[in-house]
Image (cartoon, rainbow, N blue to C red; front, side, top):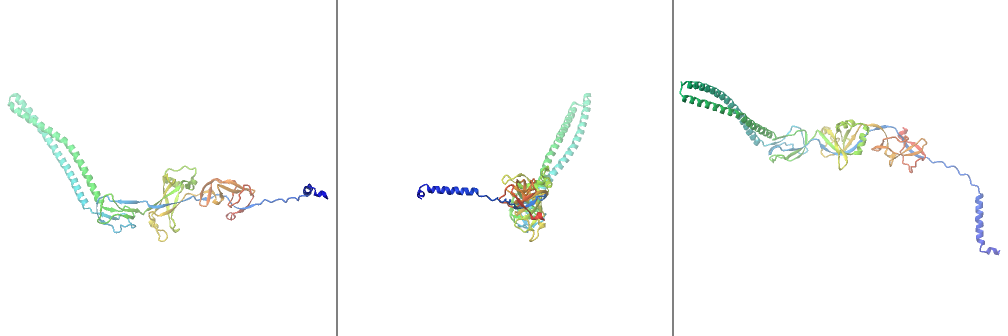
Length: 436
C-alpha cells in the first residue's frame, strides 16, 4: 500500500469523487414543476357616469361700505351746534341735521349781495327810462329841425325877393345849424345806450352770481346726512373754528356693504367651464348674468348662521400686477336689516369675510382627488387588468377632479396600489356607493 503515500494519490481520489457525483446527478429524474397561479390584487373602483357639477370658488376680503364719505366743511366758520348723537359708531337716518355753523357773517354777506343785485337792477331800469326819454327827445328834435328847415327855406325865398334883410336869413340859418347839431348829438347819445346796457347786464350777472354764492354759503352752514349712515371718526365740537375743506366726520353708508375679493385666474376655470365655447356678452354685468354667477358671504371663524346672501356687482377690468389675481366686488344689500343677536352680527367696516362664488351647474365626469396619481388615472379593462392612463383634468374642486374627457374604460380605481404595474391582474371591489 505504498502507492497511497504517493503525492498524486490524494488529488486522484478527490477527482474520482467529483466524477461520481456528476454521474449520480445526471441520472437522477427531475419531478415535474407545479403550474403557478397569477395573484389578483384587490382594488376598489367606482363606475364613471356624468353627475351635476356645481362650480364654486372660495376667496376672502374685507367689508367696505359702498358709501364712505369724508364730510368736509364747505365754509370757514365757528361751530354753533353739534348733534348730541354725532359720535363714532352711532347710526343716524338720512336727512338728520348734525352740525350748524354760526351764520351771522353769511347772512350779512347775503344782504350785501342782495342789495348790490337790486342796485344793478335799478340802474338798468333807470337806463331804460332814460333811453325812452331820449327817444322822445329825438323825435321832438327831429320835428324842430323839420320846422327850422321849413322856416329857413321860406325866409330864403323872401330874402331873394328883398322882402327881409340878409341878417334875418343868416340868423335863421344859424338856428337851423343848431337844430341839426342837436339832432346829431341825440343820435350819438342813443347809439351809446346799447353799450351801457351791456355793461350793466354784465355787472348784474356778476351781482347775481355773488348773490347765489352767498345763498349757498348760508345753506352750507347746516350739515345734513345725505344717506342712512353709521358715524365714523368725528373731528368737530361745539365752539371750534373750522376751516373750509377740513374733514368734519366720516359717514359710512348702511344700505350696502361691498367686499373686494381677489381670485387667481386659474381658480376662475370652474365658473366659466359651463360656458366654454360660447361668445362672451359685452360688459361685466352681462357676463355675470351669462355665467349665472352668485355669491354668499360668511363670517370667518364665526357661527354657521353668520352668512349673508350677496350679488356680484362688477369684475375688475385688469389683473393685479403684483398678485396676478382678478378682482370681484360683491355687494350685500341692507345688511343692518339682517342683524340678529347671537346669529348674524352687524357687518362692520374692515370685517374679514369669506366669499363663496358659484355659477350655473353642468353635467360632467368627476372622480375623487385620490383617484389621480401624479397626473395619471388607474382604470380596469374588460379582462380585469390595470391600465395606467393620463388624466385629462378640466379643474379641481374641493375633493373632486372634474375630467375634461373620459378615460378608455369606465371603472376607475380609487385604492392606493403599491406597486401599480400596467397590465397587472385586479380583483375589482365595487365602492359602497356603486353597490347601492
